Length: 261
Image 1 (cartoon, rainbow, N blue to C red):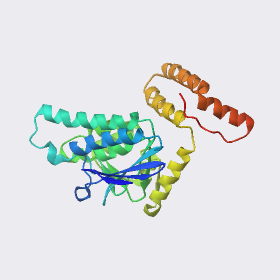
Image 2: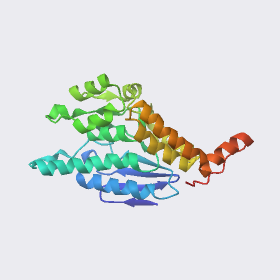
Image 3: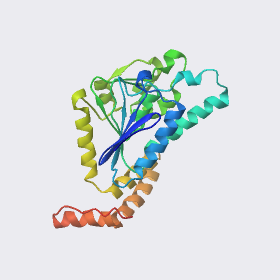
Image 4: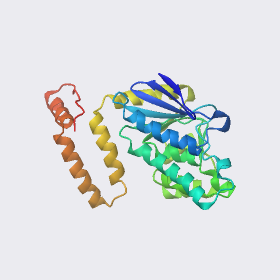
């Protein structure tokens, strides 16, 4: 199944749903319309039980060049706030949907496009991809992209990206932790689908509560994080999939997931 929406192309590659940003002539800018459409589509695809992961790609020469700056001209403060509220909601949705979201960037991923890669749960990039928080070069410091970037790379590396706006190549992005790994462009789809299929073998329930818990605890102080995650893993252990996994290990057999709460 393949559907062309206003700003996206959505196709089934089960167990994945692939969502492609589809404004290639403009390098897939994150306009308000695109961000609203992507937010809705993330939620729709994640609600399908057969979809075990969502892959985000860009059409044409790039993943995304960031916000549509033409849309930001001649706006008052409240209108600018609305654009970034829509963006913040989209980024939050990437992390709140109950399945892993994998970025598969190529070409360039700049400003809010780099933010989107950093926000995804996992990222495999083509080795020719370049990343930048380049807004500072146009008088618009990448404040919101900096939130996601600083939560993936060290502070000094984040500040170097944010203060200079320079491009970072894929090998450096991997070393710094912005992406999981870089692979030859010809192998990108194969590597991404291999990761999808690996995830699809695991308990949907465990992945769902694991993803939710990770983002809850990661900003907490250690004592509170341990309290929260102690409760989470206890609930996991008594859930049907938790009990099935433990039994399968003890009995030296493959588990049969029930995905029950």
